[in-house]
Amino acid sequence: MTRLQDVINNRRSIYQFTDEIVDDEILQQALLAASNAPCHKHTHPWKFYILGNDIRKKLIPTITKLANIKSEKMQSKNFESNVERAINKIVQPPLLVAVTSKKSHDDKFREKEDYAASVCALHNMVLSLWENGVGAQWSTGSITRDLQTYSTLSIDYESEEIIGFVKAGYPVKVREVKKKALSEIVTYLD
Ligand SMILES: Cc1cc2nc3c(=O)[nH]c(=O)nc-3n(C[C@H](O)[C@H](O)[C@H](O)COP(=O)(O)O)c2cc1C
Image (cartoon, rainbow, N blue to C red; front, side):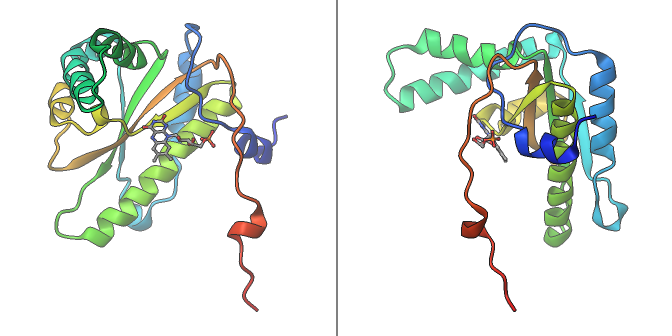
């Protein structure tokens, strides 16, 4: 049996996925894990939008626009390949999930707590996927923040914030990441 400690400590962000399809049972387990995250005042502020192939294709004009803006800013000469790479990042992952958190215009503290809860839900989803051998990457790239994305996905910008896209699938490779030693981040106060 997999130990929760190992799932947590061995998880890494995955940037390249094989084309193998992720079984729906694995996705449903991950969504259930997400739904069991803690949330103050039982607000359940999170929503999960599973993005299929057709809706991803509808994002291509926005991806192209953003990739061209980035190329211009970076004075890159490779506009075409930059656009191709940006499109592939959205089209290729076997699973793509937009995660949103509820906005509260009149209560910024509630919104902050709800964001914290939605982050817990998102990470529960990622850990559940990882336990099943499926890697994921949380992305907050410009596509997740563009107003056109909200309208393409029919997400109401006034009431929900896209906190990220989770790309997921079976890993091509798992990178090593150096984390800080506990002595650098922990202080004991007597
Ligand atoms: C809020 C958040 C946003 C992130 N957005 C991006 C992103 O836009 N692009 C990206 O390549 N990685 C993104 N990441 C992944 C981080 O780069 C990754 O977690 C970090 O390199 C540490 O690696 P690890 O997840 O394997 O421990 C994001 C992570 C978090 C927590």
